[in-house]
Length: 482
Image 1: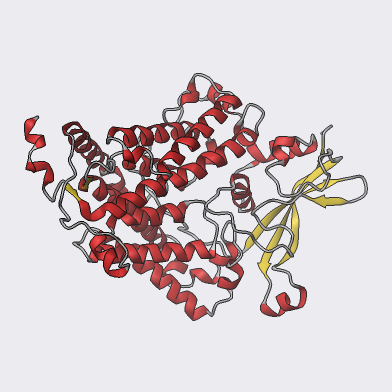
Image 2 (image 1 turned 180 degrees about the horizontal axis):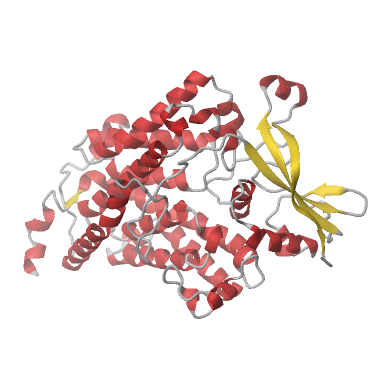
């Protein structure tokens, strides 16, 4: 292995000091998202999926012949063990945000990120529908790749940076192609006539974005197509082109951050985009950025680390065949894993746009009148301004959006109503407002309403953000006896 300790490892193809900022942002940014993911799991998982949750993991494991992938809970699940996993993961990720493992040898941040990957995968693989979102597998794949970025004592491996760019390519180009192959409103540039109003969870600025002039909405869609269908190819171009392509991706992701709540999807995407940002180019934009005198200078690369990175690169090259084939397929799958380890996945979002918004409103009967339960993120009271929650993920609120679209959900929604009937404390903590103050209602029901944004005139007159109209019952009144 002596040849691995020669100048061969200092060559430009292996490592570069021109991406110190990229490694800094990737490691700390991905770790920060893991903190959020683990904290949200600790706070929400037991009520949704715990021993007495809506879809209990023990029951799921008892009837599942095989889980979607490896999980620590395959042999034993308890809420106490889940919380131990979640809070341990959050603490480990926080050390990376603080930069502590990066101060040591390359194996230290590697072990930390691999632990984060395995711990979170254990939750995802038993999370069922509540963990069936594309940004879950995106975080897993990003965390796995981050394990091979090295530490502050080693040069940043170019192989790992290229794999991050390939991840970003699949994420962006996959989303662009699913749109072009899907709804015609993406092709005629009218998608944003509807999207800001009908997206899963609007934020405080969504109302204002919706009321922008329609010609500007068409420009937005056109810009999205440029960012997702053209710019991803430039991520593989030499500098400074790759950096400018990354800047475009970052800018479009910030636009999405300002206009909606998509959990950590946008935050993680713009972090991954830094894999294409070169220090020397960034210094031209931000003079305070330090630049190495020799962009190919190596701090030193241990032979074992080089061998591990090369092996990982070969593995990802082999696994990439399936997502590559998916990208060119007319039957393109969206947010799909092709292996049990959640690596080299297919991504995409909003292949179709809903034209009208429907919401499920849950109410309880106190013996005299029906009182509405308030959710944290999804629209409810028309006078309540939408809130900003992303990058935090409100899993119950998201599934309420899918339920209103008519997608199957009674297997968790009826248990949810039953929890309200007995005033289950863990379930009530998932809500913003319990109109019964912790007491059980006599009955509960679920009604469907059509929602639309108020016009400028309606907003000035009433101060309301929404206008809603009842459409009928989803679940008629039910009591504990029924």
